[in-house]
Picture 1 (spheres, one colour):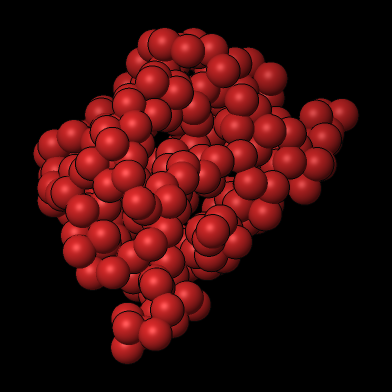
Picture 2 (cartoon, chains in turn red, orange):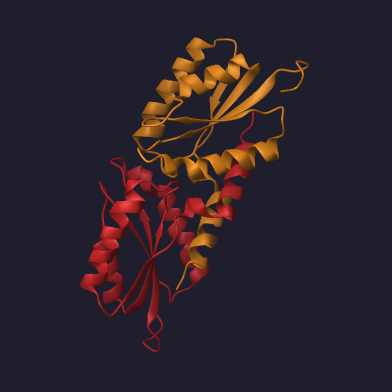
Length: 129
Length: 129
């Protein structure tokens, strides 16, 4: 946090969730990397659509309680199916209704980013037998 | 292909699949990027666990028919849940049984790669309000 001098900006990484707890490990590593990049004034949280906690409203409420005046929700999904096109907007709307004074936005999913796709392609090439 | 002088190496990008056809777009872009990197002697295919086609055995059989002697299957998944830990090994085993003369391997999922996570973290940071 920023000692109360400025309202904080928060980032919530929104992922699908799974039954196996080990599934979340890459998302936890991503959150750690992002915390290192973003610095102490930018809280970074994970939130899950299903099967894991917290859900998006809970993660957003915690960032609001911690003083965030704007929150960016980044969908950590490759493709845009029903979860991103339908479930996420509904959850975002619920968060906005619950916190009318907070600027809450959903970013474009990570799978749309050219640099992310470049990193994926480079990784795939390195796996060639 | 390589004019028959050497057996080809193929890459199959293995993804989950979804009901919405638009979901596959980032995977198609990834395949295009990978083809540009890998060159014409390395066929690159998509395969899906469910809801989309082809499935993994079909994609592998097509690469074998096209002359691939080794095939690397890259799971385009962030986390390792049941799909990667249980469903994928079963599908790989079925492919090996069907094509005993072909070297078929599964790579570590993309979400385990540090450079991929760095690219994801950089993207997330750029989304800050």
